[in-house]
Image (tube, rainbow over the protein chains, first blue to last red):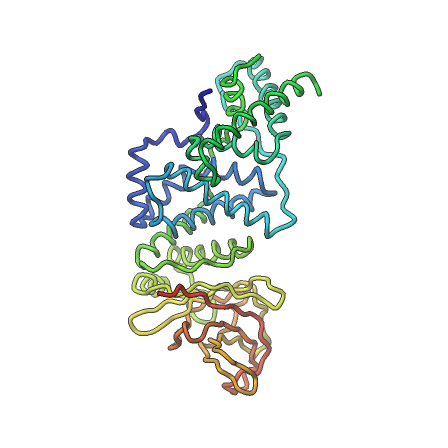
Length: 196
Length: 211
């Protein structure tokens, strides 16, 4: 099974461009940090927003993530799975800290629906919207661990090694978890499609 | 039946977020923090991980960014944009601390900066109540064994919130924070007595990375 994320805006920036940006970020170049922030914001915000109760809380978490990244950029090594995996590792820790410290925090259920595929015809668009709603419903029925591995792989576009680095697991364990999560997603999706 | 790749494609389409742009003030805060880092090779200490404190951290950074960008002056001690910029450019950040009230709620942030001529504390708070005329707040560096009968503390200066309750002040103090590890803000009666006599309203422990 091959997995390539399909929705991440970061693909608009080449690996070389990222490398140069990170080099400038190490020197605390404000322009570089702004570009990294702009480039990563949509995905980091979406990850945080799915797990927190408000846009403001998600913004706080993403802001803290970027500030911590700034603090720790000297410790970033290219021997790892890449800048995105490193950034998600920080984000994940900040979200977990927020969980522990704020018992009122509950995973958010309603995230604005992505509208992608703007060129679809009306009937096509309706079918697409229904299909995506079913997939989203199936996804929400998964356990937090299943959701996380699929989200990091598919939405964040991280490699198995990247997810492993971000979640402190081995790449093999990530592949296994992904395979199982996908199986459960399929089961839920078929149930949802049949109206269950 | 959809293949695995088709299912993953559907999932990606369903979950991929729309493009969003971070709020401008948060971009400015990150830029200011990067500029500050560029001028200071010392790793800043981590602030309290409480969610509210994270917000405070952002607000503290944003306050500096706003002061630098807009040049506004607030508080009883005017925060001059050029002076703040020079301070950040020339100084070394020794500590950042969040002062909390007796219930543990954050009430102010303090950044200690060592410059060539001494030390300055950038105090930022929007939450302190406005005191009656004649009364004022006082920031203290508190050392070990400090007690009412045998105080071991050094004043870093007094201040008073502006009409909006904001206190954005830079206080100069010849105090080594490694020796005086607590910060305290008291509400003083303004009776000319240099000793602390008023109630403590905020407190923080200074965390400094040991060399």
